[in-house]
Length: 47
Image (cartoon, rainbow, N blue to C red; front, top):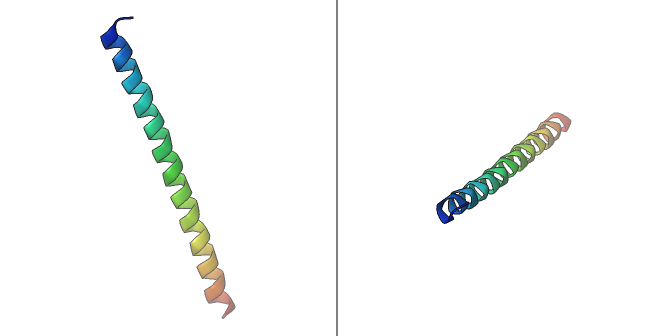
C-alpha cells in the first residue's frame, strides 16, 4: 500500500467516524424532541 492509498484510506475512515457521530447526534436530538413533546402533551392534558 503506497502513501496515497494509505492517505485515502485514513480520510475515508475519518469521514465514516464523523458520519457516525452525526447520526448519533441526530438520533439524540430526535429522542430529546420526542421526550419534550410527550412532556408538553402530558402537561397540557393534565391542566
